Image (cartoon, rainbow, N blue to C red; front, side, top):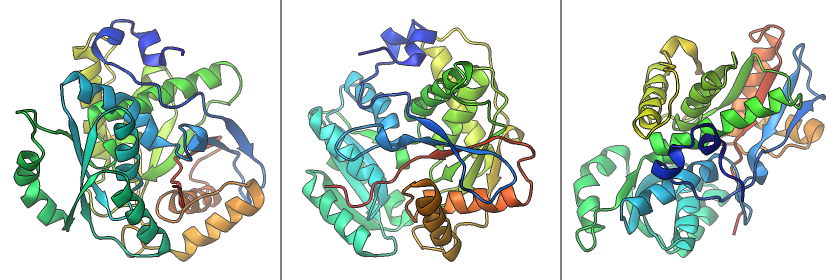
Length: 335
């Protein structure tokens, strides 16, 4: 198997930042020619990255998180999410395949057939499930959860929601380098903007950092789809800087990027009533993407981001473009 791009670019990281190959890249890019917009739009489709119906940003992050947990001697991963969390299920399944247990603290979200079926998959995944119900109760339960899942004096390896810690963020630094390679090969024109759903911040932070490291001027535009976490440009830039410090501390000889909040864009107004709630705009965008581009979006993340892209593009907010839409992929009906 080929080495990750980060290890090729910074050979010292191969000894200090372990990587576990879970998917195959580069994921494809293609023009989206059926959209009613005055600006060219391309799609980078992460749906095929991973196995067993999985793909997207969950698997990208786990490629770095799982070996880091093993490096630290952990036997259990502890993470959080909603009742229908794709992140939590992916963590449980991939961790289990590599000898690690997963404990999940789950908060409530709107129930539909998918969420009910997903929760059933989570219960069958082998993970230990704690129904903490709310963010406040999850925070209050944190010390008990850490103690409960400490085995042989080894505490669990805690991973924030969506894998959005510096180690997980490396998955999208890697993806940014992949995009830069596609630009260099002429597979993709250099985008003026990269639009994606903003659910926990790690994907946007990794892309913003990696694009600058690769010398691209592309501006990351995150569409907020989650109201259970504080998501703003300052927080995302801070995560990018912590990820950069991790790389430099582990031996990456790279010029400082020092990403600032003004270097990226966070767009609100497309969430609807709250996390997991469908919106008419997202539903219309989902049908348009399926009809014109044969792209399967889901209502919680990607359809809301695509709805925002359509509106911002129609308003001329992307200038001459081109715009790259990152289809982060949220499998529905897996397992």
